[in-house]
Length: 132
Image (cartoon, rainbow, N blue to C red; front, side, top):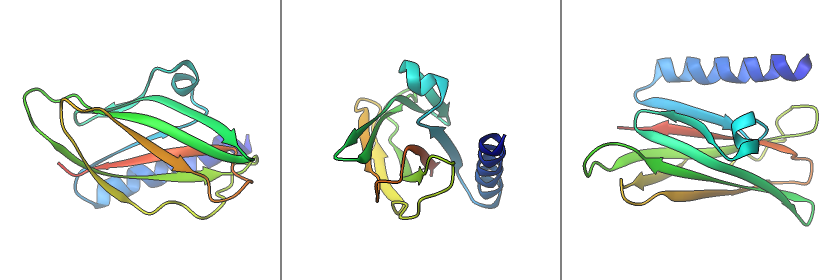
């Protein structure tokens, strides 16, 4: 129940931020059904997130997700992304990565890689801000 309320709060915050700024936001959790099966974890505004995978290396969570520009033609999409890390109880562990800018061409899917800031992280979320 606590975890469901936390995720509902996080989604509400992301939606509220999207309403206050230009562009669009995508967000996906490492424990979602699509992430577990390797499917599309989020898509919108011609950006698709797939193959969200995590693993523990030396007690620290590592995450990777593929971002693809699905727009027609040769339009490059400008995005920013960051990883947010959560402990076993669903609380943020702190040490989020800062927003990282990235240009994604239609012919060049890219992998986004994140490393947790500490050993308490067992879940993560990728947040994408689509600028254009």
